[in-house]
Length: 92
Image 1 (cartoon, rainbow, N blue to C red):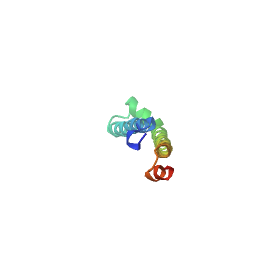
Image 2: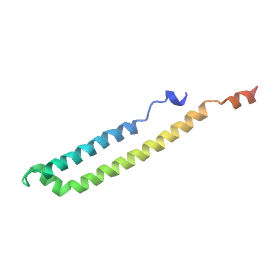
Image 3: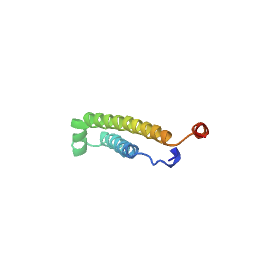
Image 4: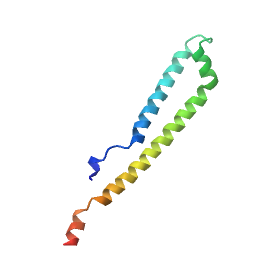
């Protein structure tokens, strides 16, 4: 199977989803910064905001490096399955 025909691994899709959640969290934190202090979302972000952002960043990093590692393994496996021109000529 050639490299162009390989489907992307699912970890890349998870990176996109978690990154979208990260962006949404940041936007919600910005909005709650301009709201009243009694707002339940502002109270939540005051207590757990840094932990939530830290967990999201850690998850993005783990998924991104995992996706790159898995993609590298799939690429090497695909390259080993496809014979090169030199291999075909040497067998004749």
